[in-house]
Length: 108
Image (cartoon, rainbow, N blue to C red; front, top):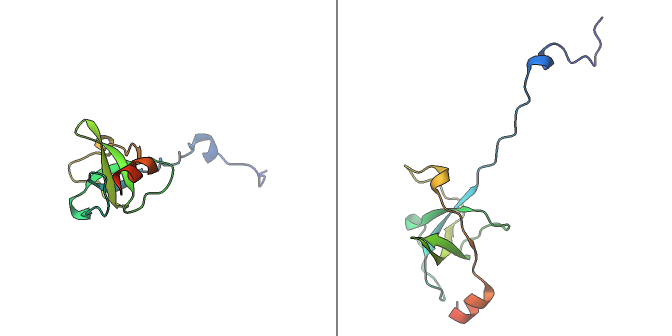
């Protein structure tokens, strides 16, 4: 006799599906020296993974690893696409936000 709470024979052989790992958010940045009113060009930005706690915003100053050294950049696109010919593992991650002290010192 079958019971309603009987899981059935398929439950013995079926595997639980793992939840898909969420894809990291990609942002586009322009390398810029700290200063007021940075010129932003989303069409010619460099793509980075956003791994910081808060959400990204256009105009936000960040530190990124560019050409082997830390440099300042400004976020110019918060919904960038993976560039052709690149894999997600090749994309670097935004290091941190530029501090308010650094911005104040630079007059930005």
